[in-house]
Image (tube, one colour):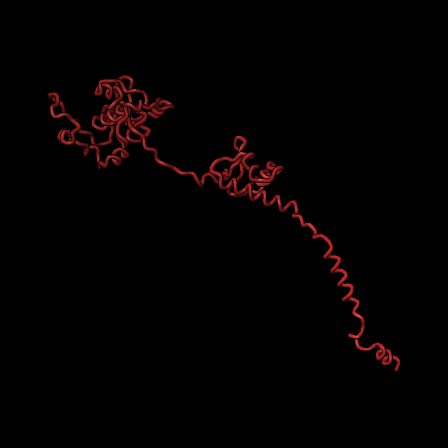
Length: 266
């Protein structure tokens, strides 16, 4: 048969010249003679790395960072403004935002979440000697008017002394005295009792207790006595209820005493 004869003339496949091996050797020699091709990074890859560097510096900074300071950590000619703008956009809807303050940049809590980080702290302040004396007079002589406090102390009450006690919450307005001018009467509050560990005003120390504590001199003027505080909060017959206009008489600003006239920390 003709087909079989052709196959016989051709012979086995491995007897044929291997042209692919010759061509492969030629290509390999050509590649060996060529210089290796240079591989460059995509510009976007460099920009992403620069964004990470700027982000890291701003995150670790304890104070706002100047763009010039950022430039020292990046290649010369880097678009610092563009990087900051991109980073600001990335953090626009997050819990912290990138903000500019006086030409410098920092991360700050998002304004709508600031309430979550607000802390309330009780501030301890010193009461002046005048305020302590006024508080003692009110506690022992209540209900008492401003004029009566000044008469007992022997000096006028400086501006702000009563207001300081009212603001602290140890003194309150009780009523109005049924005398010309209808002056306001003052008394102590439950907060005053709680701070000094008293069950009632009647538990305030008496004359002998004050002497034993060293708060009074051993030799006192004849007739000197410590009044017994009134326990009841009810108005006296010579007092009228408050009429609601008393807050209008309070000063808008409280003026504290000089530090040189301060008493113990309360």
